[in-house]
Image 1 (cartoon, helix red, strand yellow):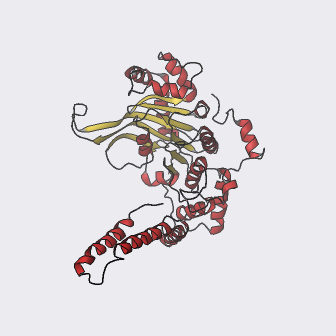
Image 2 (cartoon, rainbow, N blue to C red; image 1 turned 45 degrees about the horizontal axis):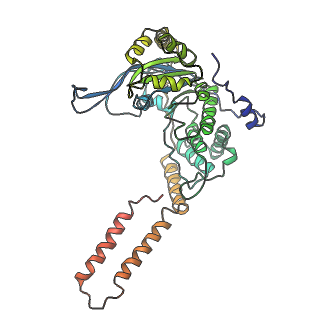
Image 3 (cartoon, rainbow, N blue to C red; image 1 turned 180 degrees about the vertical axis):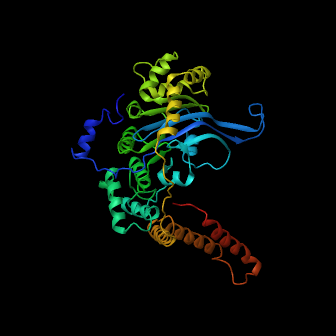
Length: 417
């Protein structure tokens, strides 16, 4: 099986770096194996013929495992449960009924320890366009690293991550918003990932890291994610219809259909597995696209999904997965109970106050556009009473007061940024 680093872009990567060695992260002291076994998730719903017990099953006895140095991709058609699965793995779901096991190094997951070694990157970027890359990283570092970390150490850590994520050339560039040009979509995605890497997590979970990106930006983002795996991180991501080049970067693949596991195992073994089940991928077709369309039950041309489910349940790949999960429980080193130290309340207050004040001054959508709206309101209301005499009664001023108060009350909820 080829390594996830071997891609047709190796020559291009060398040109981009000028042949210089890539900056590296500090090696991990707590490599982690994340596994889930017979994991099910259901939510309450109205009783129907499809849900007579008033529960809708989102995930149905799914199992999987990802180890340090491996890039595990969770694929499937829309509504198959990809995002729900990563949200459960990232401990971001607090409602609904969850059954099954989620284990860290072969032991039941402890929330405090798990959150100390894990970072999660959401599908949508939550960045303020008024700040540069360097400013964004510095503030994120001060909000995530403990108070014992000095300013000099914070600067060093920020510089390391910025260099490693390929953002050094745009470190002084604004993130950008609807008012100002800034980073490209791929650069914003890498910045979101870089923010989560400041705490040097052992496990990185990403929800659709390439959503909304073109093919070039997608490859760029995935290239840096693969480099994280090379440093010993455990990386899990959902992805929707990757290109064949991106597909070749994955170590393991999980294919879901209607909340059930159609395949979970090495990427190199997936094509032979489906071929043995009677679905040989055409020679010049993207395997990811072919297999996802194969298990998409929203259309009539899908395969016999129950047969594929049975084929996987009886396969050697499934038995090997169960054996590895069982072996983890017996052989892996116990992960010590640790808690991610947080910055002091005073530091958090100072950083948030600074960020809010600077954003208010730099962002034209916060004050300046609202100021213009107030001016327009004053002009409109003033012209309404411009030609009136001085004999107005108090009742005549009631509409004026109503317009002014209603405007002042509602304009605060308008998001012009």
